[in-house]
Structure formats: structure tokens, C-alpha cells
Image (cartoon, rainbow, N blue to C red; front, side, top):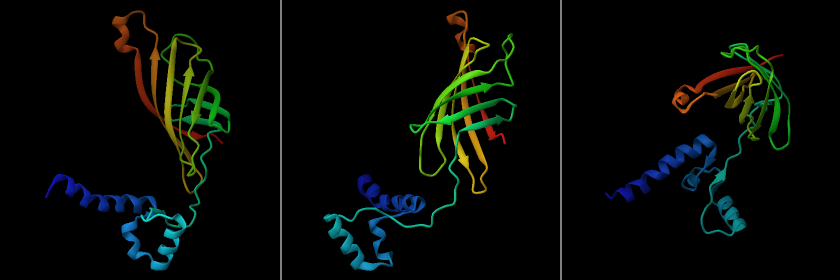
Length: 186
């Protein structure tokens, strides 16, 4: 059997699994459709297509709370951030107060600027940059907001911190990476 034919034969199985996980039904599953042939013919005439399209199954609406980045958040190290509002385009700004620092100066609140992907299911991705006011460094965070059925919200983040160095030969130690988990401060 040729490699091309094998990939064609295995595609519907993989696609069926992916479609089932996404809550959709593929045309090859139409025989299992309880609405039967008449409903398929009616929909085909309505779309004026000779090919049967992938169509979405109706499922009860999940009761998942939209994740909202506005408010105060605290991570496992005691660092806090505040996002007063997120605009209709997903942009936000605020402040970050770190609980940890290797800088010799006293810690100060530092501005953050970011954006989030606005989506339907409430599990948004986002990113923001912190310009540390007390050191010559900048951090970028990326993450995802998870909102559970019981209403708890968690921000899973990864970050890169870039510190200023005096020479190119010191560049190897200028960037650090890590991750933090933020929970809402009530």
C-alpha cells in the first residue's frame, strides 16, 4: 500500500477522533445521525453544495465562568499585580509589585502593559511586559487564564527576565526564565 493511500485511509479515523473531541461530527459519520437522510438532503440544498460540510453538534452550554484578568493577583512567591481594566480589544495596563529581587535598590511598584486573546470559552491566553523601575531589567510574561466550574481562576505563566550587562562577554548570564501561578486576591 502506498504511503499516500495509507495516509488517506488513516485520516478519517484521526479526523473523527479530533472532531469528537471538539464536539463536531464529520460527514463520514452521517449514517449515525438520528435526524436521517431527509435532514441531510435539506441542509445540502440550503448550502447548494454537493459536498457534505463538517457541521457542529448541539451540546448543552457548559457552565464555565469567563476568566477576567481585571483585579489583584498574587503568585506563590508573594508578588502581586493589579490590572484595573481590560479594554474591548484585550489591551490592559497596570502595576506589578515583586516580592523577590536581586537588585541592590529597594523594590518599587513597576508598570506592566499587555494584551489578552478574547475568546468564547473563558480560558484566555495573554502576555505582558514589566519595566522594572528599581533595576535595569525588563520581564515578559505569557500565560493562560483557567476558570474552573466552581469559579476559581488561576493564571499559569512563564516569564523571561532580561538584565542589563556591561559587555557582550557577559550576555550569557543576562536572561533568566521561570514560571509562576497567580490566584485572584479577594
